[in-house]
Length: 142
Image (cartoon, rainbow, N blue to C red; front, top):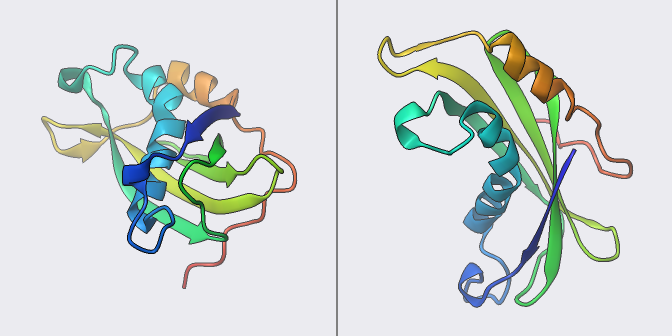
């Protein structure tokens, strides 16, 4: 599991005084940075080889300006050419404020097709499959 601390900035908030819904995905992206570095250690866009296939976020409780939250990121599923990165945004009291998932796909930008994850990448991802305790499941998507 990967842990990333974030302090909410003024421009993360909307006119209602809480973090805008789109910003949660930015927080999830920060949480995935270490995972992206497994695929592309220098985060070089010319060597990028994964794409986002789908995303989901459950907004549980609002987050406000100045709060410090922690994004917990772990691998929830590991397939042949895709995997799910799971996220939980936790406050300083250990309460879950949001829960998310992104499905990422190994991709060849020349052939425009999915590609299997390498054995090396799979081994690295398997090290991050430990789900944190006391994190709610995602609401079902129907």
